[in-house]
Image (cartoon, rainbow, N blue to C red):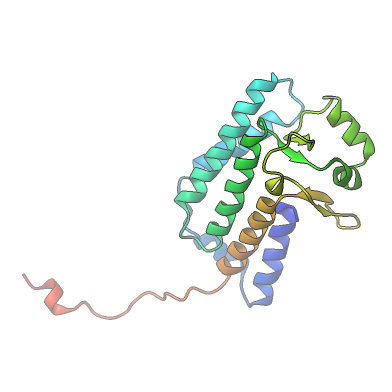
Length: 195
């Protein structure tokens, strides 16, 4: 499932558990500039600009490392350990395969069409993916699970993507619940305030 699908499923599960979306504002996320920089880099890299291949590789890996640093800083938030595990798996697979995530060509054709696969193979697309071949490293971490049509957002996912999606669902559903930590109304212990 894509990140958008995971957000929708998380919201639906949160509602089903009696949660409310406004409670997500209480999540205490730190160092948010890191994830914003990571997303900005990916927008710049993969929105049709002509950027030399080696630069794309370096900046894409940098984007992944910024995301991992942000996730690690927010590890105490429910769901984040799962998202971090998935993100780490993806970054390792990308780094081991020259800065792109390998994807099975047959599965990609079923989700995006044969023309997309031909364009990717010919280098006519700027993409964060490459086609798997006999030289692909750590194949078990690469994109090889198809979410086919008629799913609204058909795609091919990795183990890391599945873990990220699971973590996002968990984070949203848990974040929508009422806090178990009500503010204490107990008066201060006199022994603690005595001089």
